Amino acid sequence: MVDDPWSSALHRLWQAASRAEEVAALADDVYAPLLATPGVHRVVGTRWDGRQVLRYMRALSAGSDTPVIVATTRSMPGAAVREPGGEPMVDRLEAAGLDDAVWPEAEFLREAPGGSVVSCTFRLDQRGWAALTLAVDASADLAAVESRLTQAVDVIVACHTGILQRGREARRGADDALLAEASLQMDSSLDVEDTLRRVARIAVPAVADGALVHLARGEGPEFVAATHVAVQQQRALEAAGRDDPWLAALLARRGEDEDTVFLSGAALDGSPFADPTATATTATTATDADDAGEGHHPTVVSVSPLRARGRVLGTITFVYQRPEARLPDSAFLRSLATRAALAIDNALLYELRRTAVLSLQEHLLPSQLPVTDRWDLSASYAVGDPMLDVGGDFYDAVLRPDGSIALLIGDVCGRGAEAAALTGLARHTLRTLLEEGTDAGTALSRLNRALRQERASRFLTAVVATLAPQADGTVLLSTCSAGHPPPLVLRGDGTVSEVLSGGLLLGVLDDVSYESHQERLTPDDTLVLFTDGLTESREAGGTFFESVLPARLAALRGSDAAHIAESLARQARAFRDSGQDDIALLVARWTGLPPDSGLLPPDHRLEQAALR
Image 1 (spheres, rainbow, N blue to C red):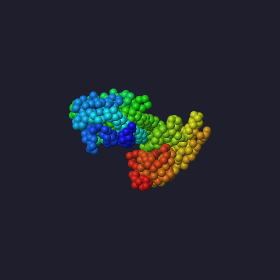
Image 2: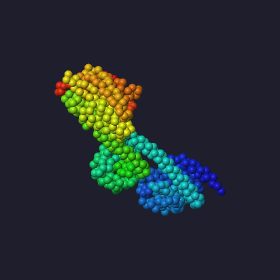
Image 3: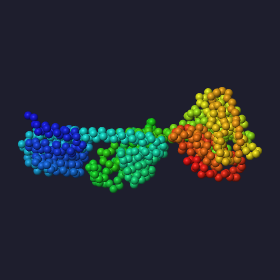
Image 4: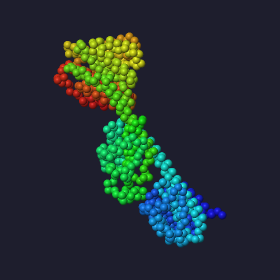
C-alpha cells in the first residue's frame, strides 16, 4: 500500500532541494517527515570535515518545533570509524552502547524513548561527510525507517551535488569573465613595465590577496611588480620579491615547472609567508578556524610559470589568506598565466622591435650636423607610426669644397625594410655627390637614374638647398626640388615666405632634369626644411597643420635653430588628431657673425600667442 504522506513529503523535499542554495535549508523539510514516521522520536544530523572535525550538529524531537543547533570545531579522531566510503552506510545500534568519543549525538539519542538507533553516514564531497541518525522505539518498522532514511539522504546528497555544480558553473562564468577582462587589460598596453604592473593588479583581490611577478634572467629571477590588498603587506611583499633568498630559490626551481604548484604549512617554513608564532597546536586551530569560515586563514602560496611561445618568461606568484574553498584551481591559474605570458611576451617583443627600429632609424640619419662659425644648424625627427615600422624620412647637411653648405631632406613613400633601404641609398648618394662638389640638380638627376636602374618600386621626394655666403654678408640660397614640400624662410623681421621650388618625383621617369631657384638670405634669416608629416598633421576638425605653420613659425622669431626644430615638431604632434607619418625638420639660421656675438632674444610671447 502506498504511503501517501511520506510520498508527498518526499516530493516536497525534492522540490525544495532543487531551489536550495545550501543544504542546511532542507532541514525542516527532512526532519519533520522523518519524525512523522511511526516509532521515530528524535532526528540528529551532524556535519564533519575530512579530518574528523565536527562542524555542525542539529537535533529535533517529535512534538517540538525548536531544534537544538550546535556549531563547533570539535576534533574527534575516534569518529574515523564512522567515515563512509563511496556509498552511504546504514547501521542499527543501541543508544546505551554508543561511545561518546565517536558519537557526539549520543547525549540526544539516549534521552529519547525506545533505546534503538538507525544511522546513515554519507559523503558530501571530497572534503567532508555527514550523518543522519534516528532514535526509534520497538514499534518502529525498521525496514521502512531505513528506506525513508536512505531516500532522505539521497535528496540531501543530490541537493549538495547540485549546489556544488551550480557553484562551479557560477565560478566558471566568473573566471571566464575575469580571464576575458584580464586579456583586455593586459593587451591594452605594449609598454613592458605597464603590462607587468597590470598582470599583478588584475588578479588582486579577485583571485588572490597578493601577487608577485618575476622575469627570468640569466642571473636569476628579477622582481618587476607586486600588489596586495593591504598597503603594509604590499610593502613587505615587494621587499620579499626583491631580496628574499628563499623566494628566489623557489622561483629558480619552479620556473621550469609545467604547471602551478601550491605551497602551505610546513612547505612555507623559512619563507616570508610563514607564521613565526605558529606551533603545531596553533596551526591545527588555525586550520580548523579556516574551514569554519572564521578567524585567521593560513597562508597558501601558488607559483605559476609564465610560458609563451615555447619559452619561460618568468613566474607569477599568488599569496592567499582565504578559505580553501575560495582558492582558484590549477586550470584557471594556468589559463591566467598563459594570457599574462603572452601579453608580457608581446610587450617585450614590441620593446625589442622598438629599440631595433629606433637604432636603425638613427643609422639612417646623420649622427651629427656640421658645426660652423656662421651657421646655427639643428634637426628634429619624430616617429609617427605606433607600430614603429622604419620610416622613409631623411635629412643631412654637407660642407662643400667651395665653402658653401648643402642641406638636403627627403621622404621615401611608405615604411618598412624596403623604404629603409631606399632611404639609405638616397641619403648616401646625395651626400657623396654633394661632398664632391656636384651641383644639386645633377645630384638629383643621378639619384633618379640610380633608382630607375635599381627598379625601385617606390618613389621619393627630396629637396636640396645650397647656401653660399657672399662678400656682402648675405647668403645665396639655391633650391632644387624633386616634388618635395617647399621650404620656408623666417626673416629677421618675423615675416615668413615660401621658397620657390618644383620638379618631378624621384624614381618615376627616366632622364629627368632639375632646375634651381635662387634668392638671398640676410643675417638672422632662418631656412626651415621639413617633410609632409609636419604639414599633413590634422586636427579633429580636419584642419591641417600646414594652414597654421607660417604663423607658428613667425612666432619663433629670434629663436635658435634647435628651439625652432623642436618646437615645430612638438606643436605638430600636439595638433595632430589623425595622421601617423614621421616628422623630420632641418633648420639653418644664418648668423653672419661668430657665435659669441649672441642671438636676438627670443620673443616667447609671440610663440605663445601663435599657439592660441
